Length: 171
Image (tube, rainbow, N blue to C red; front, side, top):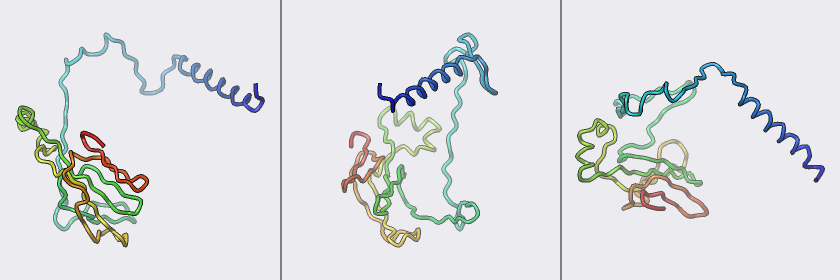
């Protein structure tokens, strides 16, 4: 055995033994609870709880409150269901605008469910909008559609001068 690896082997062995010993002590920390299969309610025997968020815009003339030393300014507005923001290495800001689209019975069911008020099911912009803020003052000098006719884009990445987009159905 290589002598330089012996201390690492000893340390690893010690850590494994310590970990197993700590796991098997039987002591419980504060707030730790144990359950048996008989103490849990049967599946679906309790009422599910779901809470949906209410989307609220900025009231006219007001901004969110920021911690001392920080300011809040509106960078962009008028986006159609923005789902993801990505800053490229050159500082350009990309926003994926997409939405869940439903058809048939799923669309009808969504209209009857309270989630429709928060999810905004319907049409999808299916585009990526690019903002350029060259002087980094927090106010973009330009805004343009970078890519369009996508399929519910979400993730974006610039890697080795290629722009990758994660659509619902592919990359």
